[in-house]
Image (cartoon, rainbow, N blue to C red):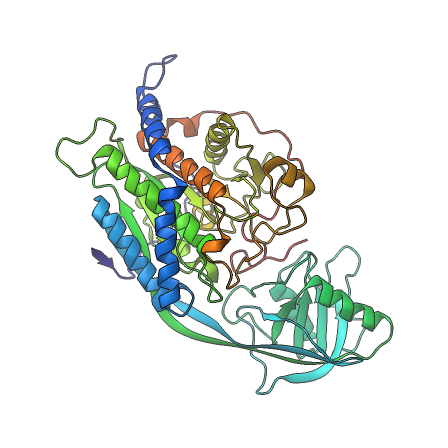
Length: 525
């Protein structure tokens, strides 16, 4: 087991994606792609959701033994990383633990009590990187900052011009601009705290983006609670609340787990990854032990199929180097993936042909979403050259199986984000987070309309019971197929593909991953 500590490296700046040779004579099938398809058929058959479950069972056992979670910077994460490293080493991969430092954060206090015109407790969740409340919290009147013109509520100073916010707590509806901007504008207006309420059903999780962004204590509440407070204020009631949030923070170290095939062309590397960490609130079995387990099982089956590292290796061993990655601290802002990409030299970055990302692949009320790499669905901007081709390959495989994929926004809100920022093509699948399944989606895939894809998203109940076996099996076969195909040839990344049809808003997912929580730092319109 190799141990790699933080090392200085040039942050890559070039934006051009790597080029990919197309072997074979013009007009004739590419023999490497044919071999990749042969390997893919084998891996799709041998890589199953049933076998992937053994890794999920182990991740649940680890969480149970370590305080109920596997969050970065905790013993639960370290045990998860050690387990993954053992599995990969035994399969024959060269394994590295890449350590980096980060700011560990943990919730200490979340309290919101409405004192007038009636007394009631309101569920509140602090926004990561919040400024902490003074000891004992703050009791103050509530004042709402409305939307002004075409700007979102709290997004400009004009939102605060119509009320006296000095010494009061600002109530702001989610939408349009970052949470950090809303609370900073409230602080400029004299507010001593900020409460943001959701603009869709469900509790609001959010982040202020980075350390030091918190100017005043800031928390998020549900749409229902926010609208009730807003209605009372609109009726002329004096609304007084007792508000307290406190977040513990300290610097810790944590490792990414990296594993690559001993052979293969180091100048043409395909990467396949998922984040290994959970939130501190729960074991994170769907988010994202599911993606990590799928990557692990694909790696195990690839090693078996190619007799990797053994004398007399299978003739199906691909010519490209395959590198698997399990990221840490994704839940804190894609920190592990950012660290990895930032530490690459320009030569190392240009050697990465593509990155495949799998995050939340077994949601209990699942959708079958594929990242919109070409931007044709109007959900997000196009990814780097080659991303459209990855989307096309995944969609084609799923459609051939009758699995009815639909697009999801390619907005950089999961670990592929740092890769596309430096011009590396990417793609992958996602089965939904806190977004609500539509009637059209329920008709397409089954499940329950009007309910979140994952009702246990970022909650203690994200355990083994929070996994759909069908979704897991479908998505691990996608991982296996794409990994096998690209391990033999990346020539298809240079070929034009037809754009997908316009997205049906009733079946597409515009949120990407994962809404506005720690990954994206953005608010939703």
